[in-house]
Image (cartoon, rainbow, N blue to C red):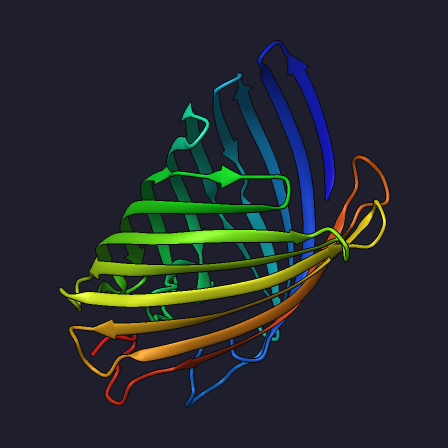
Length: 274
């Protein structure tokens, strides 16, 4: 990534360009017909930020261009974000977010299902956080309400959903080892087109450690349980190891390797729902 910034009072304008490479051995998350894909991406980003003692707001635009093999396709995806946060008290933060993005990555556009169809997603999110932090540990109970609208290339991919998520995240810094251990859990209730009563739980854990002032390494994993309409449901396990190296103040390199194993219930359709 290459970053540039300019400040004027409480406002700051930032520009960056990020390039990346990714490989997946099952791009559509299909057990019957797995297909590998290698993709080279470039993502310019332009953002305007407003920062005050108790508030923060930002507006950013970050389209992505992607060249994929083996088909030799070049695609572009639009994306824009707006967010605002207000620290009402040292223990209460209110956050609101507006996101628009296009993606064909099913783990991003449909983390609650096994959906594989390319869609354009619009998300509206509002949430409350109650963070408590000390020098060595922190815990953050939170609640998030998300309204999502997906427009796909086929009528079956169109979706409107309402998702309520309640959860908590915690972190503990082991000063002796200069290591941070994090954990989190959340419960989800949602309403989808193909499932009017959808529930699920997600459990996460991770370890991160800096190696000098320029290098950080991390290890993360999660387990997600999803139950559409009180059926047998499905489970997704994933793990990743990654790192970030910053040779200078304006250039950073990051990468990760991950494994994801979704297991659908018998009779699940293309949306991952019965």
